[in-house]
Amino acid sequence: MLLFQQEVDRWADKDFLLNVMGYHHFHLGNIQEGKNNADRTDYILFAEVNRDKFIVVDIFDHTVFETNINASITVTAERERLWGIFDERTLRRVPPGSIFIPSMIMTSGHSFHIVRRAQDYIHVIKEIDPKLDDYKYVRGLFEEAEVPMPQKYKLSWYLNFLDFGVLDSLSGIFFVLRYGVN
Image (tube, one colour):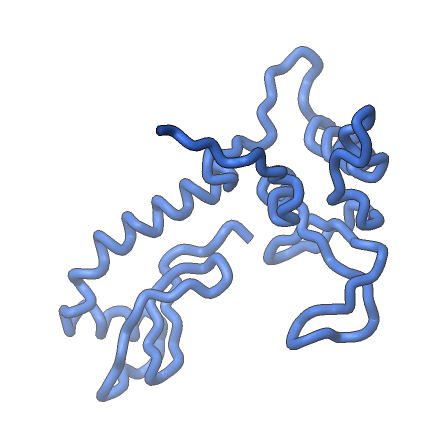
C-alpha cells in the first residue's frame, strides 16, 4: 500500500525564501534573545548577503511568510510585494524575450548551486581524505598556511558556515579547501 504524505507548504519554512531568492531575513528587534537572535518583532528586513556586501532589499511584516489566508487569496500582499521586488531585481538586465531561470530548486528543497556545492565537498573528501594520513601532505598544509607545524595535531573535516576544509582541533587552525557561496 502506498501512503502519501499530506501536502506540505514549503513556504512555511522561512529558509525556502533563502533557497529560492537568495534573500536572508533579519528580525529588527532591539532586545537580544538567546546567543545571537533579536526578539521577534512584526517587521523583518530582507537582504542579499555575501562576504563583501549587505544589500537591503526591503522591510516586510510577518505576513510575507503566510499563505492561504482564505480560499480566494493564495498569497498575502507582502508576499506579492516580495515577489515583485525579486522579479524586478533578477530580471533588470535580462533582454526582453529571453528565457531566464533565476533559481532551480531540487527535490530536497535546496537550490541547485547548494546541491552542486555539497557534491563538490564530497569530491574533495574522496580526493583528500587518504592524504590526511601522509605526514608530508599534512606538513604541506601547514607550510602553505605559513604556520609552524605542531608536534601533535588532530585533523577532521570541518564546515565553518559554508567554508569547507580541514580543522586541526588541537591548534585551532582551519585549512579552507573550498570557500562557500557567501
